[in-house]
Length: 251
Image (tube, rainbow, N blue to C red; front, side):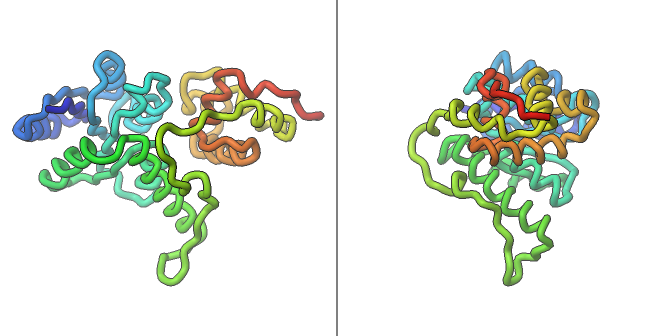
């Protein structure tokens, strides 16, 4: 028996999923908003989370971001299935990049969702599934940004580190290498890293700097490539750990 957390502000959907997932033998926890969901995962991390996006207050994007940024591996490695009415391509891409292993749109077939929960519980560990979803999302993003339609041409970002098969745990970060390269960053880039390091979420860092979350993530990806970090998540972790405090560039 697995524990499944269903997060949705629609009471009918919550009840419908709870009844049917319980029929599959699962123990089902529920949350009606993002704040309650975060309290749930911190007090009793579920085996799988079924997460809506459009909710009042703390939305699903924020829940996903905070869960994947947790230092507690029991929380950060919860497989997240997004179930939402947002069906645009950019939303699917964002879901994969930010850490969801699957993206299901409403209205959905009950059998499809039950199968997705089953697949989330079986096979490869969550970090492997998440990495594959991120790789696919980045490929889709590259095609979208280049205007490629997939018919005879597909743009592909440089994904050498993501594509390389790895066995066992990921190698430890190399903060000394990253720190040595911080002198190459611009003043604006260092200000962004400082904002990310001193706020609990990327959303709050974006609000402090009066820019959009998407702009923050785009800038973090550029900084990460310059510093040689493996991911935006690793870059944020290094910044919050004080591992990127190098000499500032000349103004």
